[in-house]
Length: 426
Picture 1 (cartoon, rainbow, N blue to C red):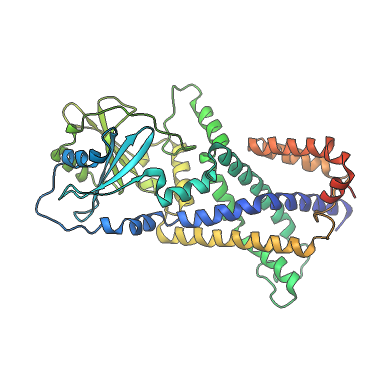
Picture 2 (tube, rainbow, N blue to C red):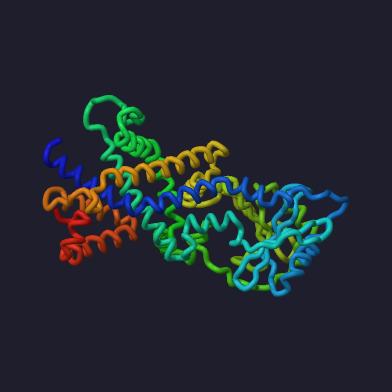
C-alpha cells in the first residue's frame, strides 16, 4: 500500500470508527424494533385473536347502531372511521377521536357489545413503531434517528472501502469468515463479512426510510410543494396529535352504502369515514402495507353515489417509487420472502454491531479511546470535501459534521488530555 493509499485508509478508518461508536446503539434499537414491525399483520392478528372468531348470528345491527354502541363509553368523542371486517366472524373496529387522541373500539356487530377499547398509539405495534422512528422522544428522537441513519451511510461506505480485498489471497475473510484462526481474526471476519453481505440492503433501508425522516422528509415535501398549493402524501413524516373533533352525521353510513363499499373489494384493512380534506364526501381507504395494493374511493354525502376511485397506478411517479420503497422497507412488497430478507438483514446488523463492539474492546488501549490516530496532512482536505458534498443531501449529517469539526479545532485541541484520549493528537 503506497503512502497516499495508506493515508486514505487511515482517514476512512478513523471516520468509520467514530461513526460506529455513535451508530451502534441506534442500529441495535432500529434492528430490534424493525424486526418486530416486519410482522405487524401477524402480531395484530394475534393480539386481537379473540375478536376474530365471534359467534355468527342471523342478523347484524346497522352501522349506525354499532357506532352508537362504540361511543357509549366515550360520550365526548366524535366518529372518525369504520373498519370493514374481513369476514362475518370479525368484530367491527370503530375509530373515535377525543381531545386529539384516536381510540379504537372493537364492537360485536351482533350484540353491540363493546369488546375492547384501546388508544391508537397505545397499541403494542404502535409503541414499537414509535420507538423505531422517534425513540419515544418526539421530534428530538426523530432527529437523532435521522442523524444516526445519515452517519450509518458513512459507516457503510467507509466499511466497504476497508473491507475491499487488497491482495489476491482468496475469498476467506472476504466472502466468508475464517473460523479457526484465532479469536481476534474471527471477530474481525464476522464483522467485515457480515457487513459486506448486508451493506446493499442496509443502504436501501436507510434511503427508503428518508421520506419519513423529520428534517429530510419535511424538506422534500416543501420542494414538492413549489408551485403547488399543497401536496397530499400517504406517509407521515412524524406523529402529530389529531386535534380535529368535528362532528359528522353517522346516519350517512347505511347498510346499502356499506354493501357498496364492501363490493369494491379493497385490500384489507379498509377504513371508511368522512374525508377531512374534501367537504361533503366520505372516503374508503385500503391501509394494506403493500402500497401497490392500496386504493381509495370517494362517495357523495348527498346521495351516496360513488364519485371516483384512485388506485396506486394513478399516483405520481415519485409517490409510486416511494410507496414501493416503503412497502419493501416494512417487509410487505413480496410477501413472506420480503419479511424473511428483512429479518436476516436486521440480525446481520445486530451481528455487525456486537462484533464491532467486541473488536473495539479487544483493540482498545487502557488509557485511550482507541481511535485511529488523526493525520496532520495528506488526504484530509479531500476527504472533507467529499464528505461535505455527500452531506449536502443529508442536512442533519452536515450540521453535525460541522459542529464536530468546530469542536475539535477550537475546543478539544486546547485540552491535551482529552485530545490524546480521543486520538485527535498523537
